[in-house]
Amino acid sequence: MSEWKFNRDAIRAFRFVRCGFDAGTGVAQLVYAFDDGPEMIETITVPGAPFPLDGERAAAAERALRLLHLIAGVSYYKAAVPSEIHIDSYAIDADTAALMELIYVNGLGEFAYRNGLNLHGKIKFPVSKASSSSAELGGEGISGGAKTLGLREHALVAIGGGKDSLVSIEALRALGVEQTVTWIGGSQLIRACAERTGLPTLNLGRALAPQLFDYNREGAWNGHIPVTVLNSAIMVFAAVLLGVDQVVFSNERSASYGSVIEGTGEVNHQWSKGWACERAFGEYVQREIAADLHYYSLLRPLSELAVARQFAKTDRYDAHFSSCNRNFHILGERPASRWCGVCPKCHFVFLALAPFMPKPRLMGIFGRNLLDDPAQIPGFDALLEYQNHKPFECVGEGRESRAAMAALADRPEWREDALVDRFAHEIRPQLDAAELAIEPLLVIDDEHRIPAALWERLRAQFAA
Image (cartoon, rainbow, N blue to C red):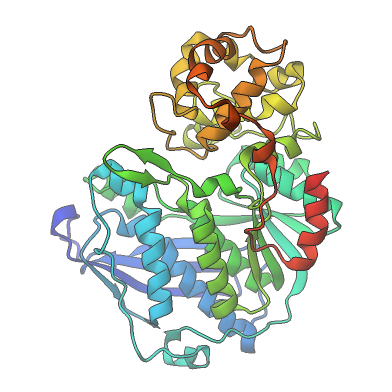
């Protein structure tokens, strides 16, 4: 075994070796391997141990653990993208295999595009006919017939440090829904934001197998993974352990739209934030893990602009939130400046908030006026889909950016700024004026998984 060397193109199979959970310590192990190479062990840590698990709750926790094992494998599978997938220690049914193939093929869409790979038809999870119901869990299956666990009404709400999750948290607070603000990993910026809410917090641990970093240096394929659905699987597992009935994310409807690339078609950087993934994953959880566990995005009925309008209603988080991805890529500790001012996320959040917030307040958040800096023209052009495609980032649709810019072009305090003035004179004349109104983009949609009793009250709040 010690002589095994990572050789991306020679690897034949990716193996899901096994997964296990120690209820006494709250630590789960997810074990993978390539061919007969060394085991790669990822650990997930859920605070609050020991967890009393018996009967139906223990069986549901095991099913949730296997679901997490399968989804988290995407981080390792992508290193070599081998032609075979083996599951060594349990069997899955056709439904589970179909969900995995949906997640892997679409969730690795940007990864495949950037690396010149075609994954369609290549990823096949092995189906065992032996697994036909969750009653057979002891017989090594994962499938079918989830029971109601009697989970208490309480939401684990994912926080990422940006405006979206804070809108969800405040909406649930206003409706009196008990919640725990939850994040994964060691970001100090997210922790500070979570603590600012004044609500109970839960920090889940995830440690990648160290070999993955070695393999990256040795020529592994690398790139974007469907991290939202991976985090969703971690939180579903935690919800079963903690006995709570809701896992809540804050993905708006704009997340369902990708970048349209000439000669390639649509590639969605944030596919696992989109409706197709939420629906498939959420239905699977209720069908296969726990019938009374609700997974949904609170903001699915809203556009990015509608979310920005909600966020602007309170200044509670102005000095704490950040959607700037550079902070999360580069900086371990909390950065002195929460906005780099030059990445697509900074551009988009500034533009989306501008129609709904007084100009001095917005400039106070960012420390400068991004729309009066001609050096920023290429970045904003990409958001507008003007002579470029939408960036591979979690940003709104091109039509939202165009509508926001058009609104600013009509306002005295903004229209003399360099980029707004350029839009008004150079870009707007080429556009259909009927498609530049903001109001139609603020309409609340009906496509979502929010529980009905909650949605009736929430809709009224969002409409206000």
